[in-house]
Length: 263
Length: 377
Image (cartoon, rainbow over all chains, first blue to last red; front, side, top):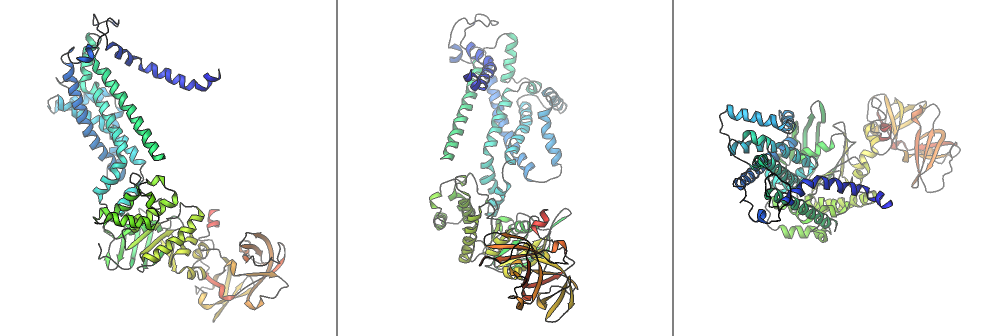
C-alpha cells in the first residue's frame, strides 16, 4: 500500500506515456512484418526486408522523403534566421508598428491550418505563381517563422540587456556585440526553435496539400498510401527512432553541462 | 580615442523621458583623477546621468566634455569610459579570463595574455581564470567586474552602485579597497550610490542629487557640516530642524526659537529670509542634568525633559521634549558612551551646543525633505 502511495505519480505517468506510444510501437512492430494483404494487421512473417530495402516497396516514397527533408532543412534555415532577427528587433528596438507586428506574428499560430492553406493558395493562384516546391517552401517558412519568433523572444526576455550594454561599453560595436554576446547567449533558444521548425515543416500536411501542385511530400505520400491500405513504411519508424535518439542525446548533454557547472 | 583626456564636465545637461524630467539642467565639473560620488535617493536621476556618460542613454540636451571633446553623441564603444554595472553584468558564457580580456580584444591590443594575467594576479583571481562567473562568490564577481573595466585604462570609470549586492562587512572592505585602487591608478571615478556612508567614505567630492537637480556639491565634510538645504541636512546623517525667526543680524545671527534665544554664525545662515529652520546635528549636542552647568560656556542651551533613552552600543540616543516646541520638534541627542550617562528617561535636562555647530536654512523648504524615515511613513 505504502509503496503504491509513494509511486502512484510515477505509475500513472508511465501508463500515460505507454498509452501515447502504442501507435508508434505498432508501426515499429509492423515494420518487421511481411503482410499477405495490404489491409491486415495480422503479423504474418518476420522480415528485415523493409529495413534493408526501405525504398523498394513503394517507388514514390523515397523521392517524397527527399523533398520533405529538403523543404524541412531550407525552411528551417530561412525561418530561423529571419525569426531570430525579427525577435531581436521586436525585443530590443522601438519602432512604429511594433505592436501590430507582434500581433500579426501570432496569427499563423492562431488561425486554423485550413484557412491558412486555402488563403495562401488563393494568393498564389491570383498572382499566377506556379505551385510546387517553391510555394511549399514559402508556406513553410511563413508558419515556422511565428514559432521561431516566439521561442527566441522568450529567451531574449530572460536575458539581461545590461550584458549587451556592457559589451558596447567594452568597445564592441553593434555587430561584435551581437556576434560575441547576444548570439551565444541565444543559442539554446535558437537551437530549439530550429528543431521545432524542422519538425513542423517535416510533418505538415494541410497547408502543404493546398499549395503543393504536383510536388509530393512525405506526409502527402503517407496520406495517399493510407487510402489504399496500411502504409507500413520503415521511414516513419526510423524518423521516430531518430527523434528519440535526439531527445536522449539532448538530455545527456544537458546533464553533463549541469554537472560541469556544479563542479 | 587616446587623445580624449582631461576633466569630465557636464554642461547644461538634461534628460527627459516624455513629460518626466529625469535630469534637469545640471552643470558639474569633475576634475581628472578625482573620486566623485553622485548621491541621492532612487529616482533622483543619478543613474540616468551615469548611463548618459557611458553612452547607453542619449541626453535630451547639453554636453558631456572630457577635456575639450564633446562625447555626448559618440557611441558607447567610442568613448574612453568604462562602467562597473550594478549587477556586474559579467558575460555568463565566457570564463573570467575572457571576460577580462574582452575590452582588450575588441580594441585589437597586442599583448592580451600578458596584460590579463598580470591584472588577474594583481587582484588575486589568477586561480579562477578558467571558471565561469556563476562559479564565483559575489565579492569575487565584483572584483572581476572592476578588473574587466580597469584593464582598459579608461579616462573615466563609472561605478553604478557597485557594492549594493554585497553584505555589510564585505562592503566596508571593498569601500576601502576601491578608494585605494583609485588613488593608485589615478583614474577619474564617478560613483553612483544612495548610501551616504559609502559616498562619504570614498569620495573626494559629492554631488547630492534630488529630483534631477544637484542640491549641493562639495567635500563630504562640507556637505555634512554645512548643509545648504533641508534635503541635504536630512539625507546626509540626521538633523534637528527647529522653527526659528531671525531677530538681529551681525557676526552672529540671533534667532528666536519658541521664545528661546539661539546664536548662529552669520556664515552658516544660508538665507536672507527671516523665517528659518534652525539646524543642529544630534551628536553635536551635550546633554546633562538640569542642575549641571558644565556646558554653559558653549552658548546655545535649552531646558527640557527626556522622553526616550535608547542604548545602541556606540552611543546612547535621547529624545528630548522642550516645553513650547511643536510635537515634531523633539530634539534628538546622541551621546558617546564614554562614561555611564547621568541622565535617565523622564529627567529634566539641560542640552547645550556650540553656536558654530548650528546652521540656518530657508523655512520655505520642507523640513522632512530627504528624511528617509519620514518619507517611508
